Length: 622
Image 1 (cartoon, rainbow, N blue to C red):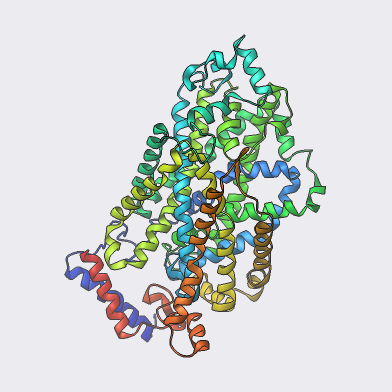
Image 2 (cartoon, helix red, strand yellow):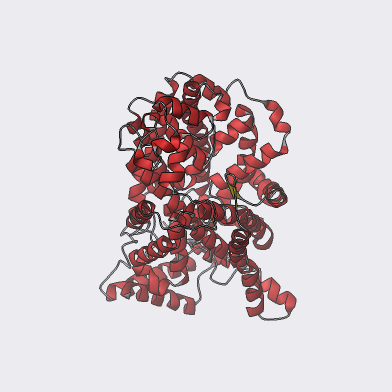
């Protein structure tokens, strides 16, 4: 027979009281984001474990897995690069991923409210939200680029292909190219380093101006594609995780199908073997492991690829049920993410090898990363294949789905933080919040689709998605291990996944208390020491642009000291008592539901219970 203690009874009482208040108002569902079977009837839960896992994999697996990792592997010794990459996954990536996902799941709160555990660091949560906001602005612009190229791919031949050399589709006249014979002139252009795909990217897709000083008009085809991308994001997130959880069944799985198709097609092409050997084959160079730059790039790639310190891991995991096995989930997602990066490299370099064979040039001269790979080199390579529009369509649909998954989580960070901050007003207005956020970010993104738009995208990426995240990640791990208490945090995790042996926690303790903070500190110092002003190709940024970039960085980081000072100021007592209070958990810190608080956290006081009931009542009415 089950035993009931005081905690069980009062926990059930509070839940039943809230339910009774809702029933009295004629409703038991506070909003479309909450299902009838949800454990947390206030915030809602994932409809199924499968939806959560697909969302996490979709969030972690993004554009960087396709357009950055393969190039880094080739650049840093091929297969030898997997050694530092795997080591950095073990000592930095996986420990932080496990920490963040369990942190959000434990308290069922977003990246700002989780810091009730260490109030003095609540500014870290605001930094995460602001970074996600800035990144969401330009990330959807990249999706807009992919949508434009998708529409352009419904042509035969492709507008950037060799057969289309003299086409006026992208305002390059025959006189300007000094055409003698079409193919010969195109080959001359390519040998001079001026590929047709590069011209199409600069002169047609972007309509790029000469510098950031020259803004130029809005490029309307990109503006419309940007609008479409925001409509897709808003529609998918209209009901929060209840709707996005259904969309990820397609967006999280389709990229793997496309990569498999591209790999099968790629390995059958002439020259594919050379591309794969350059990527990870016989040309692997173990001597590269002695280069510190290799280890720094491996750690940086792991950190950013897993989307650590963006706030998305906390936001998504906060909708888990309390007893979900977050440890197992972390292992699966991290291994899947890294496996996808390696797998994508084979698909990319097999076709680049064929491209090098066609041009009779070394693979090293056609390999590239970032925008250059996604919108110049790879589209050029696909144009060399039979039925090239088909392969181009598949590739850009893959980029769109990769981008959307990550964008879903970024917007979820913003909406979750807003709802957690104003639960009484916003909980039942999830759809309106999502639409409002999408509209505001669309308007803020319009400068990124002008003639100087690519400069803005590159600027925000450099100053907002770089070492700010290293600062946030470092403060996060130090705050939880030192201020909150690493052993206390482990006890919190055991409340969810069950008690584990000391041997089980040995590795995690070693990473959280020492290895991971040291690795992050080294990367952060190195990144600042080796920082150089950004450029786009050969185009340098004006001084005002660099200054604006630093202002964006300062705006994201300044909330950390501001909130720390404010929390100390609001505390009572002498200076030391104030600091100690600001570093101690708040009274309402702990599991969100009473039934999960147990003896370690106890039940809320009577006044807190009344607030809990009234909050649910107001949420239902609104």
